[in-house]
Image (tube, rainbow, N blue to C red):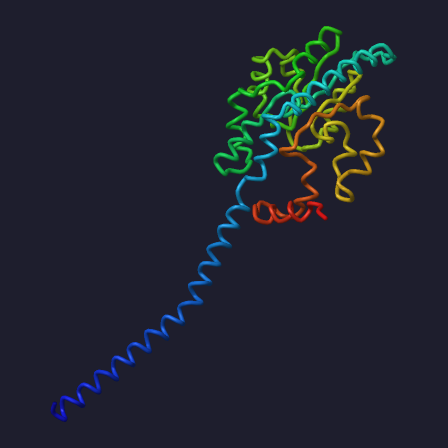
Length: 286
């Protein structure tokens, strides 16, 4: 081999060593970046889980599929019937008697709307909700229809006070009428116009009627004192009013939504990840 060929071979060998070394350096530099990318991907997946409507699944399943939920509804309306008879026996007010009921999750089962939220990943919005209420397809809560018919048979008027909006009036009346509820007319429906508080609407009814019972799935359906729960989630207010539960206040089960969640979510806004974190944060453990 000539001197020239030997030198060329040495140069090529050196070049190969340099190229190999550079490749190793490049690979080692990219390794942490790959690990970081995998970690970021897993974090994103966790965040996506947190932003889903999975928190509704167990609550909605319980509401739709548990016989316990159905039994509690019957229990509430069975007891409401007994208390209505008792209040009628002791009636002293000269005003005609009536009962006031909420609509959603009190006389109508809207859990299919929550099911739609779960299946589609959508959240509540007035427009999305109205798509459901306009269908007028909600079924009756167990025991509700029998109770309302019983009240009517006793000469007791039934008023429906709901935070459904005024533009849902026709569909709401239609839904109750289809199911056979008595007093399914404009005179007996008090829907939301401006404020969410039901105080003014209850007071309007009380001007001409003696309200014997208030029935709902939310404490706000009974009295405005329950509207503020910031201090201890409303526990102390419930304790103060404990004699009224089963007397004038009849409560239906609803784990899917309600005013009870407001002090928990507090300032989370519409951020689903923040809402998820706040829910987990409030859970007691050991």
